[in-house]
Amino acid sequence: MESIKINIPPNLNFVPGVRTLVARTSFIYGFSERESYQIETIVDEICNNAIEHGSKSKEDVVTIECCFDQEKVEVSVTDNGNKKFEPDKIIASNLKLMEEEQKDINIFERRGRGLVIVKKLSDNLDINVGEKGTEVRVIKKRGLTSL
Amino acid sequence: MDEEKFGVEVKNLAGYEDVKLLSIVGILDHLTVEDADKIIGSLVEKEGMCLVVDCSRLAYVNSTGLATLMRYYIQARRRKGSFKIVAPTKYVYEIMDVSGAIKLLEIYKTQEEAIDSWIKK
Image 1 (cartoon, rainbow over the protein chains, first blue to last red):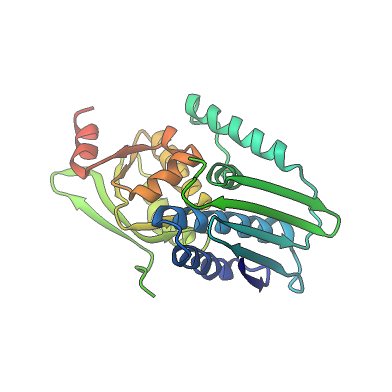
Image 2: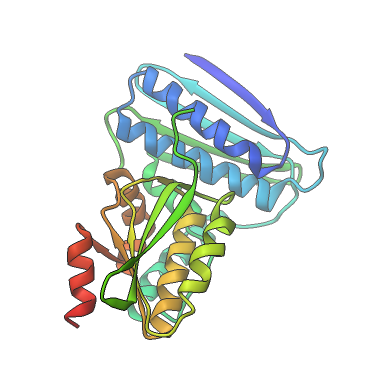
């Protein structure tokens, strides 16, 4: 297994470069173009959440770690913010919100699809919320997508 | 870098003042939605305007970009207009599908189909 580890400040400007790096590395490791695109999306959504809802001060750090082997990539994004949230409830409520939008377009909320997208594109999603920060860990298997 | 720079191209459709042909190019994410708003934001607020949006050159969209597209759709509908997506790439379409956006957005394979759906309504 080989890995890369990237520390970025909590600034959205850094996310495109990170997601592109991970996507291209995934492709080199044998993930298909489609899978690499999905991995880029996964990294994007998790990093954006970490920055928008996690780390707040300029001294905070968002850490992205990706471990590649022949079968999968494990992506871990950690922030040291102190937000309190319950990810399972957020995902469940966002799925419900998406269903409601079909029936009435006036029920609309701008935010909230990121975690649902990550969950659907991943083979495994773990979110650990602690006092010192949050870690989101995703596994994406090669050639065995959850879709 | 081999990505197209973000932009929104706008053209008129001859003979139809209530139709605009748009093309979204590049990446629609947190960093570019404000640029999209500068052009599309005012168009969706016009009464009875149909915006036909070519997405064949939309290379990447995240949940923020999708939420923005959905907001445009809803704003246009509220003004008795329309916001029609045309020819997203297969990967962008998949993200639209996974996010649930396809349940709300009108998506067409060709510009002609999208225009016809407005003209012949």
